[in-house]
Image (cartoon, rainbow, N blue to C red; front, top):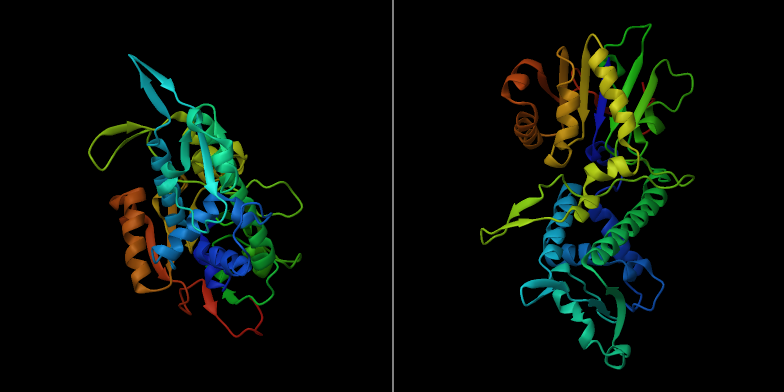
Length: 374
């Protein structure tokens, strides 16, 4: 049984602009000549997450950051929100102090680190004072209102990204092509089944290499984080790592994340948006197979997908794991990552590292644009 595991590096190898910095650059370019005014209908002005990520990119030299960095940044924001003074103590009891979250209409920058400056006590709120200079975003009647609002804002950010993927990636005509070495697959002539565990939102593999309906290979793709589809309701998973509820602050104090924050976890969203069921089906197929041969292409093997990868890579005792890399630096990084996921013993007995564009052992062989895909 052959399983391809695809990460964002697969799309990047095909010159597709799928880095989150590509998306932010697109947004900046799209609206750079527009006045920043919250009364505007422009989505970039209304979405706090998008404004925060743009602020981070422009002020923290984060041009080449990856989706892993975005997921980490979401978690950093959650810790900031966790520290907001949304309660006050009255005698021996802790009582909720209603808040107003506001934003300066003409402030082009927004940074969650400064969100404390955008909160005021409801009892001190004066509509006449704020009417001219500020747009009131949210009246926080209880702490979970803010968490729910920020999650809806994150889903709006996800919808903006999905529109970008459709118009600037999926409909992109000029795509770099390779020779996909299907001879690397071990399926017999009578069972040319290829399963694809796709961590991307795009259908690049099927679009380029399996678009021919007469192909002798039958491809089963599992979009574990959802698939961009302009015809259907979005089920895109975009969140942060599976963090522990307890964490330590920089000062050593232990804090507890409220359970309401769980909705930001990719783990939680996979169940919420029903992308986990196909993955569970694939786990069963891998467990039942006589042999499982994995081909990992373009996946960073970072911690945000650690549990998913560990489960499937260790499910079958007779597995072979081929990890393809594009340069020596990536090879060293992937060696450390896979060791952390499945352990040194498993790496020693099952893992092979292969240069992905090697003409003999590789799987994506560079070719001229007009050559045929084989």
